[in-house]
Length: 248
Image: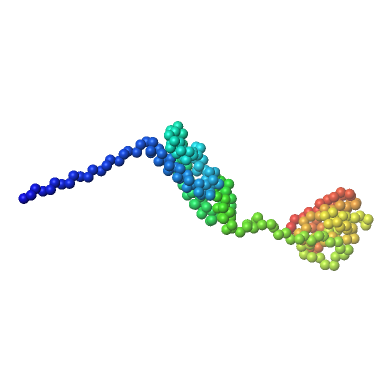
C-alpha cells in the first residue's frame, strides 16, 4: 500500500508591521483635517458655529491641520502640532456635532413656542449659535399681536357753544359760566369763547377743558338729558384753569 501523501505545510500569514507612533500621529491629524474641511462647507459654520457656546467650551485656539500635515511631510517635527493642539482639534470636531444636534432640536421647538417664549429664548445663552432664520421662521407663524398693532383712536368731537339749549343729549356735559355780562371765558383747547348767556356743550370722549376767564367767575357742569348737576369750579381772573372729569 502506498504511503499517504504528506499534509501540505500551513500557509504562513505575513506579519503586519506595527503602525509607528509617527504614522498614528499623522493619521489623527489627517482625520481632523478632513473633518474641518467638511465643517467649512456648511454655510452656518462661520456665521454661527464659531460664535456658539459649544465651541467656547473647548477653551483653545483652532489649529490649522493642513499646516500641521505639511510640517510633518517636510520632516519638521517641531511644526507638526502638539498634543494640546491635537486634543483641541478633536474637541472642535466633537462640539460641532453637538452644535448641529442642538440647532436641529431648538429650531424645530421654536415652531411651537409663543412670541413671548421666542423672545425670551433669543435673549438667553441658548440662543448662542442658533441661526437667525430659525427665529424669523418661528415668528412668521404668529400674527402680529393686537397689543403691538397701532390702536385705532376715535375722533373726539370739539365742544360747541349754544345760545340756548333746545335738546340735551345723554352722555354729554353742559357748562355755563356764572359771572357778569362783560365776563368772557375762553376755551384754549378749542379756540372758543362763551359768556353767561351761553351754554358750552361737551361731547363724549372729551375729558378736559383748559379755560381762561377775563374776570372772577364760576362755572357749573351739568350732565345728560336730565341736566343733572355734577360740579362747580371757580375761575380766577386772567389765569388758566383745567377742568377735568372721569368717564362713567
